[in-house]
Image (cartoon, rainbow, N blue to C red; front, top):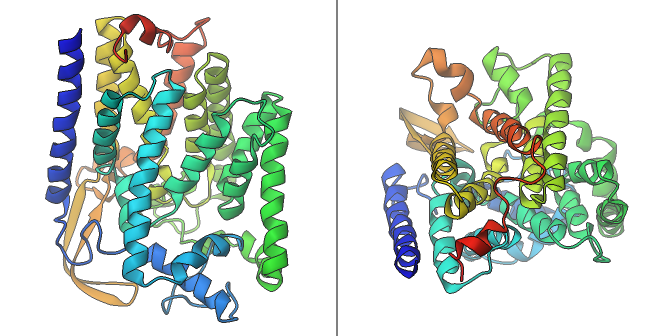
Length: 426
């Protein structure tokens, strides 16, 4: 048993080293602009928005960096202001380091929620999975753009994986929703289960951010909540290739910048019903991490605009699959979980697409374009239904698989108590 555990840890260590090399193969670390650490455009927009407020400007009227709009709720400026006081280089270093710390926190928190104590061996596995996760397009894009979604997910998981008896249960999720509205979907998840304290906590946290923003930024808050809030196209046009929501799928599949609102609403309601149903079933089978992951993925599917980096919820999903592969009581379950983990990696991998010729990105011209993500791959026309919208299919498969496995069972075949019998973490 000791030799098996050592072999597993060594294998994960080697996998982490390989992931660092593969990351360089996707796009070299030293490639100007396109390298993993050589952009952070969104972080610069956050900083520019904070500077606009500090200088007395109108947050939602300003064209940041010459042409970018500020799209987050007003209270987010408070979060981003410390980075406006730094140089861009210092902000990039601090922000990027924080992303890796948040990834490690999410992975270890996920393992703990699945019943695994955080031992030195598991820390090695967690570090390895951080490096592997960076190969996934949602995570790589988060790092490359300097995005905020990893932090919001970390706050939500930390908040809602705690016991319901906590007085502050839900507050953190409400604050996350105050920065970016999509976490409000967790209120529905909590209300369906009659978890009143947590649901009220989310609402109180969210309303608190609005009140705080009106105190600090009354003019911008009024403009946002009475006008800017309703303009979904401010984030981007729906047929942008990177829009991985249901609305984006409709726009890209039918090649239109005005997809049918009726069709989108019907499909979004069906997706919300599917996701919340699967999440509630997972919760009732003592699989709370899976439940929260499904709700997070549902929020991405039904949102009008969901960039690839919004789908960071594939990280805890991957941890769940790794956990089941390690804890499986039978070879069949181990093979199934491992196969699913590899499939998730391949579908969400940061596949590179190089387009030769000069291209302009936010006013700066580059000799070529190096995009990442399966949704940029259009070589196989008969697979277009899948490749242009892979993340929604991941969501559907995850939700349906959850229902197929857990609905007929009194307790999941992946019961985390199997760890006690497995002895791996001892």
